[in-house]
Length: 144
Image: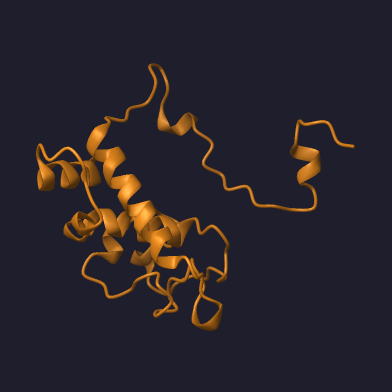
């Protein structure tokens, strides 16, 4: 996150607000968004499979894999389709992508993020929980 924050702050200095056109000047931030959508898609449309190359490390968060790459999430490249593709592509793909990029850019520009005192990143549960028929058992709300 520090690397993305440095890119945003170094690019815009004292500008105060980052607009839609400004996001195009932030290749690392765009790579972070792509990597997030690859690793944790809102709706898993593709089955993740093991890659033959050891250095690919598909389960790790490595935004640099998208730097200088033509892969995007707008449905044209089937390696990354968090918004769907073809006739079934999300009609709000543009506004969704821009909103995520703008929000992240402005949060990184405006705030410093750090762990609470006495807490390490190892203390955070990063396990992904998906919807299932057993969700009722995990929910603490009364049922019925």
